[in-house]
Picture 1: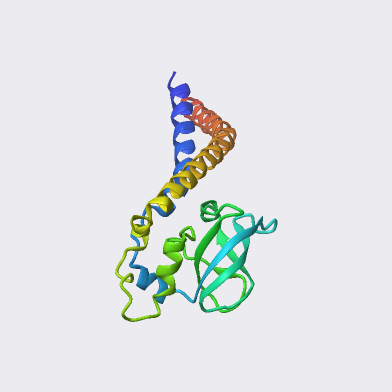
Picture 2 (picture 1 turned 90 degrees about the vertical axis):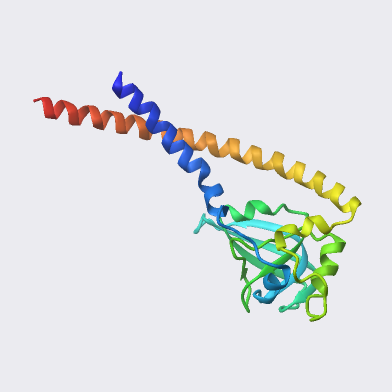
Length: 204
């Protein structure tokens, strides 16, 4: 009875921890002002994600290639390659346009974990384009409040993008949960057997 309970608890704990790791990794992102985000970044560009590849030798890294519509700061190139850590690349979907804030002077560039990478709506591209002007009126806006300043048609479009994104993320969660259970259940069984073995050895 106790062993069965331990197996259930062990499975639940392992599954919960592994399932929530992506959430914990973003939980401490407080956000900064748009101006601060811009000033602290080496490169800013408006680009379309055209390629997304996982490194077979380093499975926790993903390389993405953007077709650049407009360079807003730093590197001026028609194509820019950016490297991401696992989990963060889930924020990007191939074929969509983004305003990308990236660090580095040579490709592949890198993106900081907590930095906002918004969809490239005309309003946001215009706001970011004016941040070099010290008299701009957008720098004080928090990077995570940018969506509040979109036009109504842009907000409606964002709702559609978010809905599609949520569906894709749910599919990914379901896939990950299945993988976690395949790992968690055997691990919990091993833990239960080990506990039984230790108890048996102690009673001898």
